[in-house]
Length: 247
Ligand SMILES: [Zn+2]
Image (cartoon, rainbow, N blue to C red; front, side, top):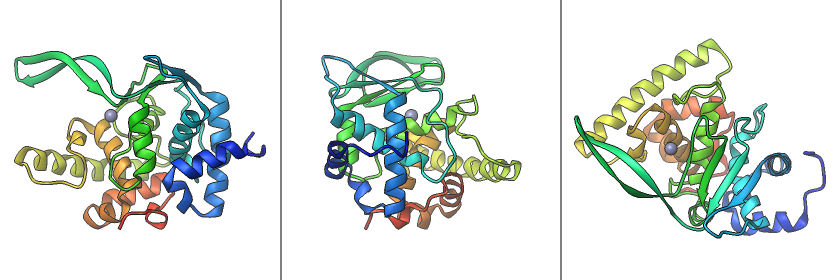
């Protein structure tokens, strides 16, 4: 399936809308297109809130998600069956703890979500399009939600994806523990951070937010968080500095 000729119309859509793809090496681009073919054959898309799924929607999501698969042997987000797409942000009921015994209940707007037992992943098309067009602003809802799917591959939603060796697991645990603690501390004291402070929520969000920064602002991440950058580079077997549009 990876070797099948890639539809010309899809390629034109990717070149037009998915900015990072223009900077990939020829080998990486060919690998990406192969993964997109498999991804689109395996995953089901469903429009929500009156949204119609088009080829532009499918390939724009697939191209960004498949960036996470390059250079690794992978099973294409095995826990994920369906991708639900809303036109813009969508509303969800949420209970949020705001104090030790204080919960706030209400409707919040969301750009995306996924869960370990959901089998699905929800995205706002507005946010997907923005993420594809602005590859260096540090925010990308597709990379974020699919990073959660990588986290789920070894069963737990704990911010630890499937790592090859025991040695790698130990190094990962040590680096993530200290980086997560410093993001929490910075968040509490209001110190500006490169990483989105949403990552201070828990280790799973920390991983997802780190993945966004790794692909979108690799130079800055490497400069300010060299150990975190190194762990992600080992896991992804990619060095996004090589194709980043980040200044
Ligand atoms: Zn998240």
